[in-house]
Image 1 (cartoon, one colour):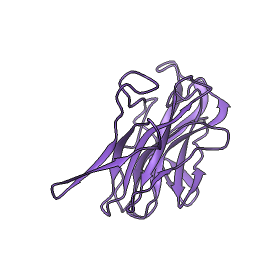
Image 2: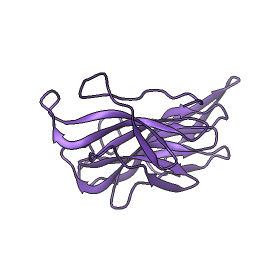
Image 3: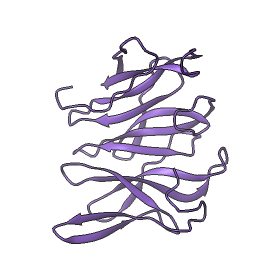
Image 4: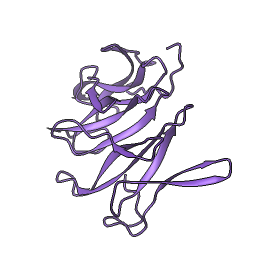
Length: 201
């Protein structure tokens, strides 16, 4: 996802902002001529965004995108990526500052769920450390939401074989907790995704 108007370098730079009680605050982006776009705010006021970091991904030839975390004291923290990967995308944060989303690794994957060109892995980021949550058996997974208990929901390929319906591997929704990814199944189809998760799991 490119936040600029016409590629790299950006023709128009976009910044995340916070509005509270009539006060408009520019949250910024990575240093330089880079953009950011917010995606989530927790009840405790933690703000999550995604944006360009000024580098070009050698695998895709497009500007690298990274999940960013805005701290309450004004820092812009890049959540990074997995070893060998160049991209990450943050999708949700809870009140404890646990971030979930996706990150690329260095393994080529023609079915890359986020178009990274490599495997797309579900991640959990906590206090500067990124964890690969694994998959349901296929090469890719996406972590969509995290609750206040630290449970994570998303979807994952269940194998590496394209099915005849979508032309891609079958994907099921999952619930992850304490290192275990539970396959929630589907209604008989070849694609399912978890969109929300309450604090009771």
